[in-house]
Image 1: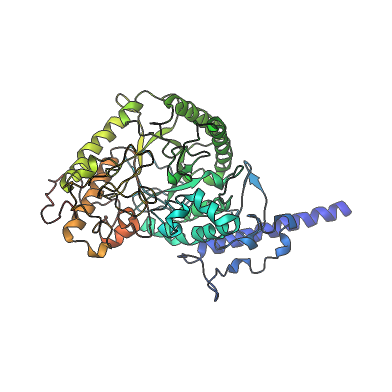
Image 2: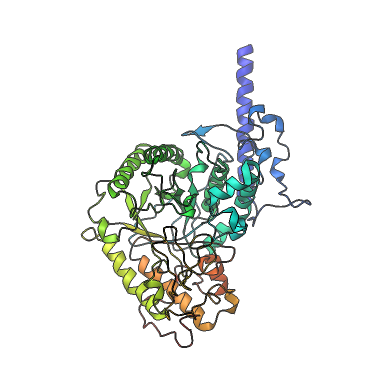
Length: 538
């Protein structure tokens, strides 16, 4: 009788928990779209969904850890039932037990539970959530507003300076407020249908002497995917920073040396990144992610101009095998490594479902940044269309190709865009890390000291009609060219001040199409001369 009684108690407990989880999910799904945490009188998130949850349900060993809902800055739309369950060694933290894949982003796209079809005929039109779970100084300069003598230039130096406690509180507040459910609703309302979510390895693991905030971004990544689902948006998972840094740029976490597949710890960090993908792919092979994860990214912008090409190719093959063996059916995305699209012809052809990821910008090239406005539009129409067609054709390029980053910025003027304190090419104040790629003479089309960032960095409400016309045409020309491939993801949705890098700001300013699938300019008309109404030096 004792055994039967215990069994009944266990069954009842399971039923109670299941009902509670389902009710919580139902309430979350039917809730009004939130534009951010609901604040109490003290200005902190009210976290009303902790009401009725006993702190005693959290084991003593877990109190105050990332598993403890009572330690979270924001609990809205999270399941606050304590769990330490994992899949692939990664926590199911904050997830509800049910999900709904019936939503579509817009009338042009199928619901998430229906096959997308061919990206050849229905290209992705998406946007990045850059600067959210992987910091980038130009996107959120307020987080890097320190005396330059402190050397705070990336997430590594920022978290080192803040220390564990302050770094954890500062970054979680950023995660909770920079992106909300309203973000995903607005993205869908803009006629976009995919969202690329950059995150870095410390969402999964940290290593000796790492200052990064461990696992907090993981919980927000999972909530972000659920918000994308709720608004019919498919997801491109993007690992933006790998152990050791795959490119030495600030958005990999640590600016400086490349210690992935290179340097004293290169082999160790390459293995760590494979172990990370083993965990990630086991987790995202769960049924709840089968429909919504459309693209699974291996490594953002590996700097193959510095790394051994063969090493990166071999690592890519190993990662692909791990991910497929763990049950991921999504397209697997790998970066072009800045080698030139034609140089990928014939490479990695034996791996199924691989997609080449290229990032297209004119402004980081000292020759292209000097193109006058009309030539920038013409180049976007002709040059990038040609590159897309070369890359998509297996006789001349890799094959399936997607442009996962681009913007309508025609200068590199945004604060911290080229690294904290590095200046810019437009005005000729760019000082590089190696000193070999400095640009110390003005690079705007007039190439003289009249080159100014004032207008490019101004509030969009001050833009002239001609400048707005150019910016929208430049954006729409790129959209058209990139749709010759499998589509595009604008970089990025929101910035604090760099308006020409923010899809949200561009929509508000009227310099992007009201619906991404209905551009006004489609490269089928004559490109106008914007000068003299629009000066070439601003």
